[in-house]
Length: 204
Image (cartoon, rainbow, N blue to C red; front, top):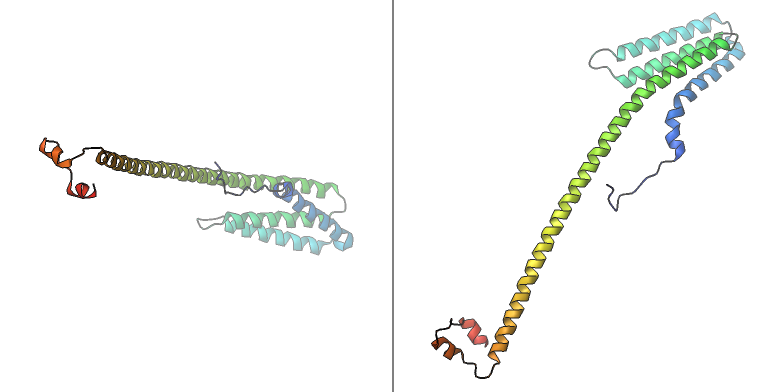
């Protein structure tokens, strides 16, 4: 249920598609930069290969440390493992002299990136759906309370209106009775009819 004054925000299709394309864009960017690096002297460079291997292992170790224990942070661990894979891909793509092996690693890295991202997307979708259900329940509860309060206020207004109408009719009846020819409140009292209040007698 959407409240009348609640804004409806429609996201652009690019904003919806960007997270889905991010893993492929990241691995493709790493591959392209590595091949540029290959063309500028990294091909068959043992020193560069050792450096990228060391950095990749260090990132993998950091990810393993971040995922161990109760204080482990899955976001940091995922980032570290992604960095390790990117460094490994860059090292192989920069060292190799052909494209088959870099493309194979690119395909494996892209598949792994989507496998990891799918987990976070499922978690985010569950949290979003839970939040939307919670907000919908709150809106329904608020709308129910507003309906109850509206009915209660309407009933009070109707009761007050009925009381005012009854008072007006009673006053009109008293005025009409007092205007009748031969009306004598004292004679009515002597015949045993209920006595009129003093205030009413004074007004008549």
